[in-house]
Image (cartoon, rainbow, N blue to C red):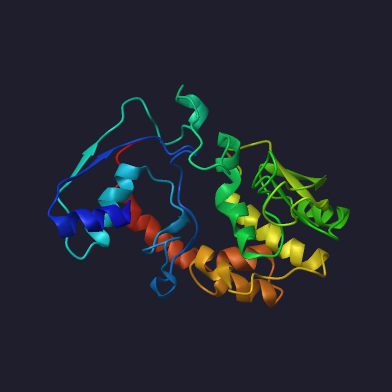
Length: 259
């Protein structure tokens, strides 16, 4: 969206956004906010990891806050959508935006468990439950036990074993966890992802970040990686971004179209 808006401005074209539901609702923004020094195709500008906005709202925010020269923007609003609505409230068919986003349940957990792309653990690619199954060779029941001991809201973790058909550990059986979200209103995907990183590092001696520090691109700074490596607990890691997140929420509020 951002890159297309930049291209439209450079070409002198009007930019029209036909809005669509945020599949995981439009609740408050969650997670770390990007530091521009870590901008990549994963994230261009300082927004929260889980922004809780629609594409039209994002376009308004980008145009007002980040584009050097605003584009001529037109947004076409939805009817019948409310911020609290999850995808199953829309009555629309789910069309996977990616082969590894097969269901709305995948989308619900993705903004937290996508962080495992920055580690040497499988994020469940090559299974029927990508981003809901996580694991590696040598991981055992201790990870699920440690994750459940965090008592994270809205989710429980089951010891699980699986063999990815592609991607990490292709054709090999690995141990790990499966997420079971039982209260999506209370569930915080980003806090959950951090809790899983913290407990994975503590319960499995083989834990490692990807050598290119991809986790820094995913989280928008070095903060998550360095805190987890220093032995910080979940609350400490989450607390480290609260000031930045509060500032983003203030800016975000100015561009919301729906209640």
